[in-house]
Structures are given as structure tokens and as C-alpha cells.
Length: 426
Ligand code: SAM
Image 1: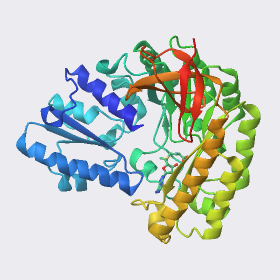
Image 2: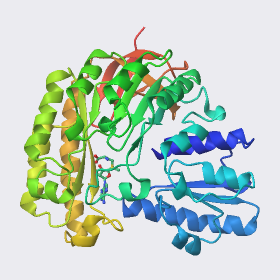
Image 3: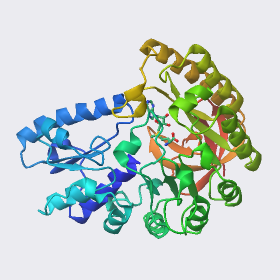
Image 4: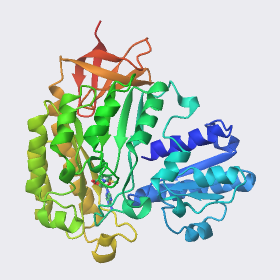
């Protein structure tokens, strides 16, 4: 989401005549786009912000903008006091305050710009022109914010309530991305499978996938992140029927124990989660499934953690994004529940899951050995091309040719837990 938001700002800056530089001290404008989903991300942002202070002191003409979830959608007066050298504060997704500042217009408090229509009328989610033709795979947000309110999650507080973007705005951006050379679009939403529930006519993700599927030039479409309660048969039918929609579902579980799930306010039981996984596997051939897990949620006992281990043993996901619980300001869990699992124990549980996933991925990937798979290559990295299979597996291949763009058939010659190596077939 932040990658897409950053490109959105970069494109808006280009419209004013700015050009990118990779050297911070050469910049006239620096935008720090921030994430605060865990304390570690926020600390990183604070560190960067502090180090930018000396640049601003040396060059008072430098325009410094702090953007994203560290600012949030409400009051940022405390940030203004803490970081008086920051010129512009902007809520997530919104280039408006910075663009106004650079044009000498009054700074609009970003909280007033909460409504999607205003943002979408002024700014597009396309690539900056300087990146056109060089980006194979791009992100396209289709929902702003989130209304689910998981007890541990700060996102709804910082990105605001769920607002689906109008299908026509999404399609316009998707066409522009395809025209600028993008081959793969990943549609984004905190709960992407809820797309359209909050806007007139209730368009669905399935309908949107069908419309985007018809855009010339696009080879692949993905979407994330889904919530188990909203994974409808319609969406699965669209994935099954549309060849350009990739068979990869990101379906966070977060925990395996029902009491923990209830305290997390996830809205499903373990049994329901497993039933949704079974439904997905039943409908989609060779689908890959990724999940998110939080270890060390307040009160999580060893026994309750074992439930998570059991559920993962049953699901055997293709990927698990595992996080150690991090209390976030103003969330329900931070206000009402003691962060009582010691850090070392959170780390131990983290490692247990990491190891399990390594074993699952080793076995799942080994099935690809000797097979030819279609790979969309994105870029060359240290002499090797890096791309992905339809199931989102990372593949490396050597080639003197420019592989970015068309889908290549690759003969897999080596597999490991986190990637594979292959040869381009003639
Ligand atoms: N909205 C999606 C969902 O249904 O869960 C996923 C997006 S969420 C912003 C990304 C991930 O960050 C979550 O799935 C969760 O695992 C993790 N996360 C969120 N809040 C966290 C916290 N307070 N501590 C640790 N991890 C957290």
C-alpha cells in the first residue's frame, strides 16, 4: 500500500516538474512515507526522520514531508511539536497537502481529505513517468482504510474507515498502468474481498476482476489481503475462470486458538477458517495459500500457541508471514490487555513457526523440480533475473536477454524453501 502511495506522490511531484534523485542531499523535496503496524516499523521511521534533521539544518530550503500512518487521519499537532523541522504532514495515500504547499496554496489539514472521491479526482495510482516501462508488477489500491477493528490493529485508527474506490476510478488507473508497460497488477485492500460493500450498487471484487481481466496488455492480476469471512464463491469462481487471475490467496489466520481469535476480534473460529481453506482448495486447482500469524498475543498460553501450530500443520501454507505481537497506541488490546508474553518467548514461538514454514515450503517447492512453469520476470538482480510463478513462487534464471515483461517458460532445476532456479526453455 505504501509503495503505491509513494508512486502516487512521485507522479504528482513529476506533474509539477520535479525529477527523482537517489542522493538525499541533492533533493529539493523529501517525502518520508511511514508504516506503524508494529513498533519496529515506527522506530525505523523515527530514526530516518531524526537523521533527516541535519539535512534540513544545512539546507533550510529543503521541503520535508512526513506522510502515512505515522501521521494518520486525525490530529498531528503532537508530531508538529516533536518534529518542527517537518514542513508538511500528510495522511496515508494523500499527495494533496504537499502539492498545495509546493504551489504556495494553504495547507489543507489532511483529515479533511478523508473521502476517496476527492483523492481520486485529484490523483491517480499510476507510475511516475520516470518509472514507466521499467516496472513489470505494480500495486493498485482499491479500498482505502479498514473498518474491521481487530483488537490489536492500528490501521483503522491511522488509515480511517473502509472506503471502496469507484470501479471506474480503479479501471482508469489499471488501464493507465497497462499503458505504461505494467504486466501484472496486484489489487490491494486491508480486506480486499470486502470490496464494494460500502458503496452504491455494491460492486464486487469478482466483478472488478472480470473487468480488469479485459484490459489489453495485462498478463496477470492478483489481489490481497483477504479476510476468511468475505471469501465468497463468486470470488473463487472468478479466480478459477479467469486465466489471468493468479491462483494465490492471502488469507491471514492470525491464531489457531478460538479464545485468542475472539480476543483478537477476528470474527471466525479455527474450524471456520479451516472450512474456508478447504473451500478454496476444492474450487481452485494448485492454489497457493499464504497466511499471517501473530505470536505472543496478550494471554497466549503455550497450549493456545500449540493450537496455532496444529492449524498450520493442517493448512500447510505456501507462506506464513509471522509477527510477534506489538502493542500499538490506542488499540483495544493495548488499552485493555497486558502484553504478558515475554519477548524471549515471543521469539521462540516466532522461530517455531518459521521453521515449520521452512519445512512446508521445502516440500511444496520440491514438487516443481523438473517441471516447466510460466514465469513473469520483473528485474535483474546481481546478474540473475527474478520472477514469479502463478503461485507466487520466486524463480531465478540466468539470461543475457531482457526477460522483463513477457511470460517465459522456465524449466526448474533447483528448489529451496524460499526460491527456485530454472532455465528458460526454447
Ligand atoms: N488486514 C489484513 C488482515 O485481515 O489481517 C492484513 C493486513 S495487516 C495491516 C498486516 C499484518 O500485520 C496482519 O495480518 C498482522 O499479522 C500484522 N499485525 C497487525 N497488527 C499487529 C500488531 N499489533 N502486532 C503484530 N503484528 C501485527
